[in-house]
Length: 313
Image (cartoon, rainbow, N blue to C red; front, side, top):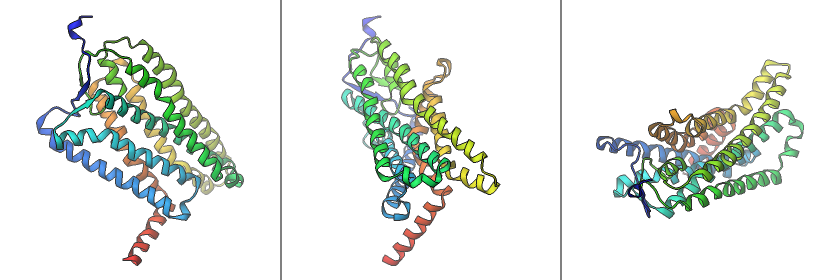
């Protein structure tokens, strides 16, 4: 490779969502609105579950973990766009870029694992309802959540170790709005064989495929149990209890598939930005809204909190 096209970088420059000047203000206010709304909704769910004792159940315990992940995920990825517009600084140091990539990576891993734990919770609730509170006790919930967080933290370390060994890049301009794995690997002029193998073996099989299969197997048993219920009302109630979780699982896995597992011919920078924005901004906003609008317990908790606030005021 031509040595003149190789660069040892100490910082990167973000191109952002769009480089058109006339779009910068609309993009800023759109991202700011989505970020604040997402943060507010997830924080509301977090506070509701923590303060309302009627929501102290395994499903809402995992939902709190999901809200925490979503709040951190939107903050880590979207703050670059906001800082660029307000301060005019669209650069990030090499070390900060790797740190940002690591945090985003383990948050995504954690989300997939937490959703897997939630699928097991739904499996026990529908397939073994009489033993639900005995099986899904407090100790098991804390154990599952701890394992999910630890696995997520450990899973991304090999990627960061391999990336830190890259010695040169064709450019220090990242055509993205945050430090993501795919754009950075594309810029590297180092040998990327090792990280591509890790992406295939660890990223596909362990990070995405294994949680997906565990969730898929859980829902096979869930659907089988639902069909064995004699009454239509009973089947509908059983399906309703897992519909919110199933909706979130479908939305997340489909978006990750289109972002990372598409054919190379369809893997364009513009589409990568679109799916990244969807994953980092839209999904963290949809997750709590889906649970809020579809769940009577959350609505009741909101009404109780509103009445309590009126009394206090």
